[in-house]
Length: 230
Image 1 (cartoon, rainbow, N blue to C red):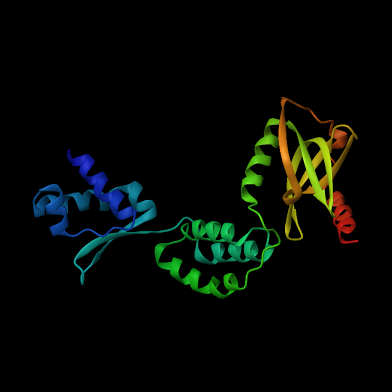
Image 2: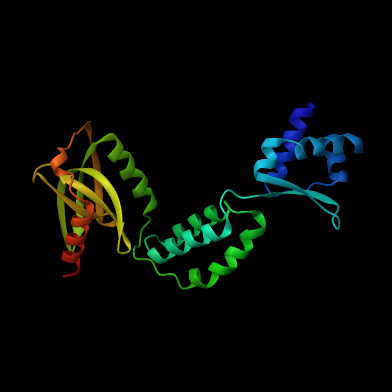
């Protein structure tokens, strides 16, 4: 292993949360104390590393470790997470996964603080849906970009309808994600709750929906939600 490979290996370990000391370094790489400190200096002096990370020394354990400076501050990520949690739009398992990923965007020293501030909120969390929603958000996003038409069953108020349409957009309102759909056979545009779709199949060709059928989302959301609440 040459010098560059060794430095990268040491750095990658610390980026994954490992702490390194001289004894461990010597045992692993068979190099001298001088080389150990030279490798650490190479990491500390790298401008790309310093943009987002800081190299520390724990004098008690006599080990070096790395912290993340974060790409977003703690207040911003806390506000975002509070909004996400209050939406109740994801099952608890998905919420936990998203929360953990977002927390990693802040400085390492602030991550535990955010977790404490969210602990009680997460404990009492109640979801508005029972099945995973993020895979559907991802899939519908791909269909929208590709202008794909789909055939699907839509379940609402104990009724199941088989329809064909083209997804035009994804929207969020009142604890649920919605898909704006242009229904081909009926030549109209409606909003459907994303979690009510079932047995979806795609058709091969792309479909260009007329501009006149791309309705104002605000008006259609208010109308659709008022119907659902009746």
